[in-house]
Length: 397
Image 1 (cartoon, rainbow, N blue to C red):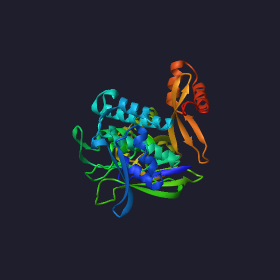
Image 2 (image 1 turned 180 degrees about the horizontal axis):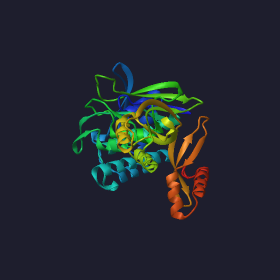
Image 3 (image 1 turned 90 degrees about the vertical axis):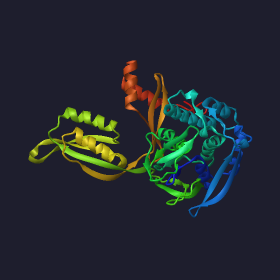
Image 4 (image 1 turned 90 degrees about the horizontal axis):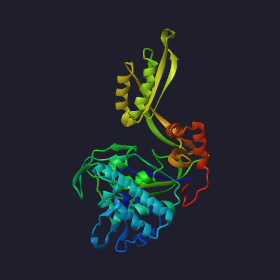
């Protein structure tokens, strides 16, 4: 498995990602030919090597015709991509990415998806960035992309609507359920296009995975920063036979003997809703042979304080143990399986030997079972069998 780790210690933008891919070995000609393939004939792309903080990196610049940025709707972007000479697979990926962006912008601005005007991200440079990223991934034969947590800065930036706070609202919307952290800086390190590509391309978010490093590439950003070089580092390698991801979590523990068991079950549901990664209970015998329960909750480092307060508020415990630990995680991604009752979401998990296993989502299977009056076992079987059907029509099931 060819794995690419995006080391975003200084953020990510579309041009930084393309630069890193070129530095990894993506052929420049494929990038330079993109405007013609898409139909942006007046747009020019330049590739040059510069130094950022002493690091040699590739800088990508996209210049639209007459140096003007064009405002486009989602429908116009779709038409442009559908009329292009891009491979069918790439067309679908680019359109799905811009549809995701449209949903984020629509929510931020309180309007319908078809009403959204793409300003900066509807311009030729953003279209080249998004398209180029998918083309580069295919050309470099990257099977799996892992993205590091993204650094989000504070301050204000200018857009077509005027000053907006950092992180940009659309950026935050695109990064829902993704790993981020704040840095004390007033420069925009993660752009909306960068957030979109990180969300669309990445199969998982973690620290550097187990792999044999084959090459590294550096893509240059626009800022000159005092505390770090403004570059995106892409590390290309081959996954080890035992291919797992790893991250760090905090385990919170407490033992109680005076809490109603019904309340414990309710607490587990609520703490997961508050952002806990996992939660479970074990029966124990305490001092004086008194039966009790040991409650375990896993939280991400950034959520530890919030989850701890909830823990102490909604249980009878007067104290909790906090243990920082590391966990190993098999790569996984959400997939949608067609069944006779409609589309059902499942998890595709990659085992250490490279085999992929489809695990149905219980809650969705439960909904189907109740709605259509069929057994949940039958729904599970249908989902698993549906995932094994041969692919047709460009990979769609």
